[in-house]
Image: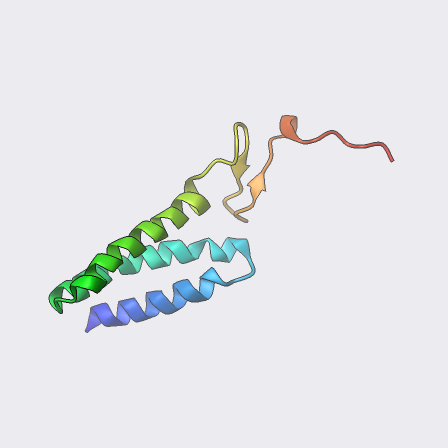
Length: 101
């Protein structure tokens, strides 16, 4: 029963955050979605729902891709992702030169 509550809460939160217009909130969807996956695996294993059990591994890989993209990536050599906003931050030496007005 508790696993169903966790699945429902994490599922609703991750879908809600996936569609949030703010990148700093949207990046949390993959973390919350990934948290739910062991509970999906447990519940479907206990119920012998083998198709959904296998599918939960595919979902886990998809959410892990989101973690890699939103939390672990570097944009390029010398560039970083700002952890507060989730936006790429370009190193000063790589910024394009200012054009004269």
